[in-house]
Image (cartoon, rainbow, N blue to C red; front, side):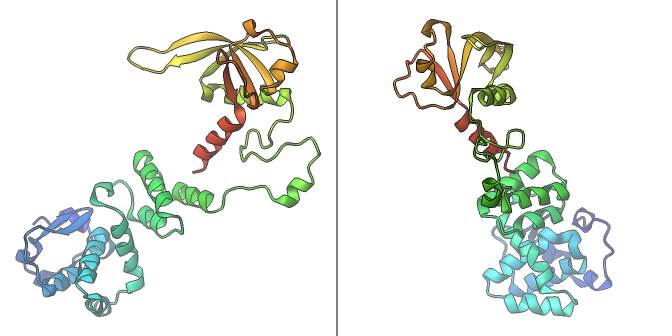
Length: 293
């Protein structure tokens, strides 16, 4: 077996040389695992000797240590693990992080280009298992550094909320907090709807071409086909802005000059099906939920 694969230039202590290669060959040793090969008959004593081997080369073999501890605990050998730690002057609380990470991360999600410290940060946190998995998947896809991972964890543990005391000091015409940095308070009038739509228009698939003060309020292009192979297809739409969708009726707008109603709250239950209604309240909620990393 080529020891260079998993030693990562760690200096091999002299004691390690006494472990025969025939024992090591019973393990499927890769840079991110030390899994027992199926069908191999490995004794408890051999498990102990291999654990001593990997602990001797320290954290360069963190994945192997975690896998071995899990296997030994499944056999009721916790006291042997402690004995090995004491023998080599290791703290069990220190290597327990290896065990915790290996128990949560399957082999297919272990990456050499992501430090083991990054995995420890994620799975030592108080996040729910679902949140931990989501951050791990983002780390794998984006190659996030440990500093960024810590920020993501803190944002989920302590989301930015505006206190009740702070809300009580706001002017009466301020809307409720949205949790959205670019528009921290809900609109309370049509002008706020226009401004918020301008911020979200690209996200919603619109390209604004013209804005005016008579119906329709806006001319825009709407992306109706996102298929990259067939090419994007866009169509021109006429938009009317309203704080509430039902205001379209009270303002006596022409049904024939409008295609889309953009509002903060869609309360028009009898709204004709010819209109496409964009309720910014629900759209903004989705954007905020997606950005809570």
